[in-house]
Image 1 (spheres, rainbow, N blue to C red):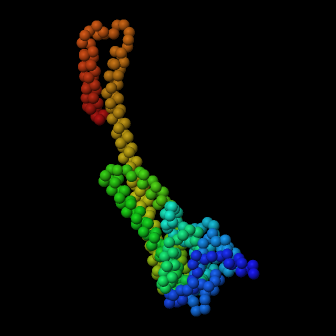
Image 2 (cartoon, helix red, strand yellow):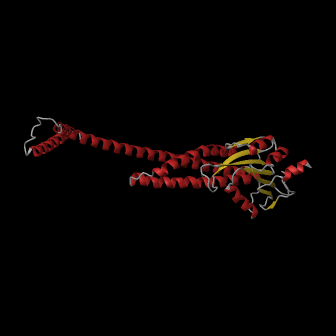
Image 3 (cartoon, helix red, strand yellow):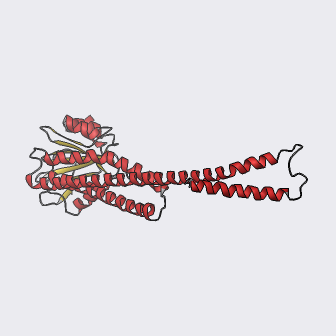
Length: 325
């Protein structure tokens, strides 16, 4: 009686029995055994479901429980005699969230069962659910894993290519139009750094899945999984290239800014050098004491001005002759 009450608190996001021809029916319960005649059962849960921990303890082996209930995750793959556990990450497309804060997807796969657990909404899983409902379900747990990974990587590729296009536009502004998109450059660099931190272990995990020695993944699926892993590495390379290009743009902008500051400082130094003797003369003749020459001469100010102008021109000519500018 107690077990039934605890199980009743568990509410799957999706629960289907799937046949080998791709048809599916909603599962009648939350047990791990598929209906008679079905190829396998797919159960999809929310990590925050209060009944998930107890249900996992009663129905799943230790490796599966640790993977599905882990609080903090990193993309990886593990095997034991009971099945395969896989932790992946997908693009965060939830409203109000940063795309680079990739969401975790935990997977447990056995011969007649696949369980997926997420903390936040994963659009690749929602698309897959729509395919299952319309009779286009993967015919085995391995095929479902292949379709899940393809959906995750496809969205990652779209992001990588979009960021590459953004970098192209920014390079045009920086190198051709001499504009500095500083408001966009720094946030984009931070985003790319976050993406690389998540995508690198994701590519490694997908490669491990494709190379795993298990009969859970048939030989006809390995080329699909290898292709998916290759596409993930390609997306990582695109993101790394974008990161390097953004770094080069930032260095270029810093160099241009420093050159402008140095040039302006040099010009100010030349002007200060020219006005240095003039400032000395104005200070000298501005002393308000007796004995100043020209005090009683009506043209003294005129000749002082002419003399200062001549000194300024002569100073500039000497600096030019010395190639100071």
